[in-house]
Length: 421
Image (cartoon, rainbow, N blue to C red; front, side, top):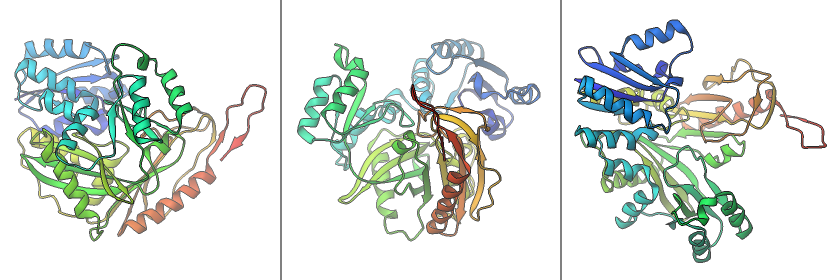
């Protein structure tokens, strides 16, 4: 078989040849930043592919489509593999143009476009917060008059909470509209608005193979939120215990969404559900691996690596037996940057229950704000026999990181900089 792989992730964590095996031709079309900066390591990475094209401009460049078509003329691909959320529609369109099997554009759009997704789910009776398209400023005003404040405005095809804002009153609405000039043009803006609901956020992650659920498990972010990350607040997550009374309802609502949408028969999925005082409300679902170290969190609990299993399933390999519940509870913590000069960072972590702690920047680095909910200067994985154990370890970690981290705030004009923990 000949496979075209569209890739954005570091090849150090995406060893496609190891996953797929020998006897196949693998052609890699990748963001150049995914390659190792070390010449020797990079040469070893590229040696596992029959052809590699690395593009410095990858994210929204038509060079990807151009090179994919050129490579197909040379290699004659049987399938296209794409793991990134931002490559799903691109890969689907290429499949349809080249008449290849795999996820269709209709399917990819239902998982990438939140308005399409919510319309399908609402028609099937899945409980959702009130929502509407926001093609213009008038539509946004109309929604707030019907449903009140606060509201959440987000890109229909965004990811990582980028571009998501909570508006609390009319002043904030007009400030937002002024900063988003597309709301005043004749061309519809690609935005969605929803009523904000107080909630505990659950994420449900899993794997579907040939239409059968192989793994599905919920985790809770507790009182932390993705939007809080953008404001400089730590985010944490912990898998639910096997006897958690909310487990079955969360899994049932997720499988209902998968049954409702045009879901590929084989896919990873990452769903988000709001736990509110009035019950569960479905937020959204993606047919890709979640970010923010969630794949490592799942691996801690179940002992399996979802991206590897997914790629092996796509390429015809039988899968090992996957446990129906975790052997232990996995958790994670992400510490977002705050604007300023990083003077001191935590050293070696010796907190019981913290299995991995990583600082991604060195002292002396000038930090900016988080732009996505996975941006961080430090992160950790936690493990325990119960969710309570994991959350206790994360609480101790937070106290320690806050005590050991010193960020000098950027001075306002006419003022002096101050150090902050």
